[in-house]
Amino acid sequence: MRYLIFLFFFLISPRFCEAQLLKSNQRFTKADTLRGMLTPLRTCYDVNYYHLDLKVDLDKKHINGSNLFRFTAVADFKDLQFDLFDNYWIERIDYRGQNLQFRREFNAVFISFPEILKKESKHEFTVFYSGTPMVAKSAPWDGGFVFSKDSQGK
Image (cartoon, rainbow, N blue to C red; front, side):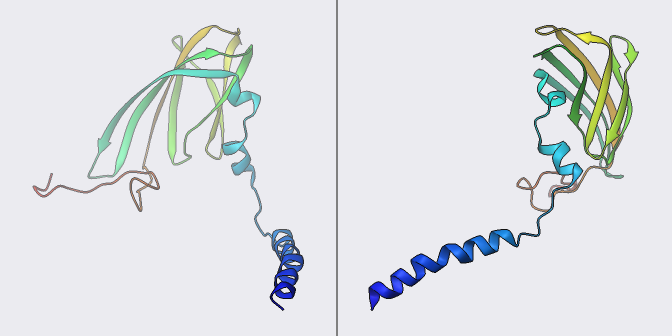
């Protein structure tokens, strides 16, 4: 009898698992694809260094900042993608003293350089931005900022 029960569960359980997988309601959006897919626009460069400079306004829960990207071209390219949450407004993107053209799609930013960047060449650009950061619900596990004061009210 024990063997019959085992055999029944052994034979029938894969059907239940398959049925559950086929009923998945998960849908991937364009934003998911932009964030998670390694496209040529994301893999054409290798970041060597970031310099993050932030000014935090604790009362307004607002930040102003910049991020310097130093990178090496992994392939010849003219356009690349980096990520910046869409709750941040981009003021400008500087490259060699000029403002780069860019476009946003969800949390992805696409920039175009004035010339093709050659494989193994080194470059840098700086993104200037501001906005209201996401507040962490369970820091540090879910990311975001924590706006709280210490025991001295600071």
